[in-house]
Image (cartoon, rainbow, N blue to C red; front, side, top):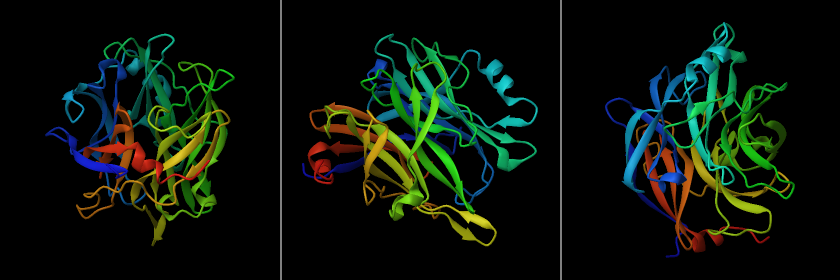
Length: 342
């Protein structure tokens, strides 16, 4: 098998409750047979243009295998009402919980769930906020929401789409998040380092590790979002480093008075988790789904979960056009051919 990846079937499809589903994360404690999915309950406009508002819920999913899952009940988080009411205040409106990521702490055995918390400002739309929320428990049925691990720092950048890194030699984690940075007329999505000394306590913002405007890579010229880091047992790219999946979007365009977004595709990157540096980002997309954009709108392929299934093989999950989740078989031997020498 020489291909870097093989496109497989649809593992999650929207049902009668939801037209749009995305951002799957699977629970290692269940041998990846259970997980959490973001489901869109309403969409206000055209996703291709700035200004669309999605409202979301997190739902549990389950499956008999890694190739097919069904959408279950809404995820129940203890303390959710109290925490969100305190965060909302008078002027903010929480649009729901988005983009979940599960992390199992090997030291404690606890399950941590991280998720995006987007708040729309009722008075000033340009002052909306994005927090990285958190819940913890022994399993998905006992999760209790805490205060967010990341709120908005003095730069107002916010955080979402966390990528959990291993602890470095100093004992803490230099995780990655998608953040934002306004430059002139455009707001870029950048990859930013965040420092976690404790996975359940507040984290600290670090430096920007990748800014699309600083690289001449058309496929990721507008927005960058960190995806899953791949284990060394799958591909080893050197001491203190991991190969990862990065989601990229083409540069924004101005159409009259509106901002139009480009297409999303999936690429590769190498992360130095010891020092919090991104050493390399692929010059071309790694995966562009065969069905992306076939509905006539913006093409979206966005990866969120990787499961190693055997020696040199694993499954990557990505949602396509916010409509379904696809699986792809990744082949380490084929991927290595795409990487530079280090």
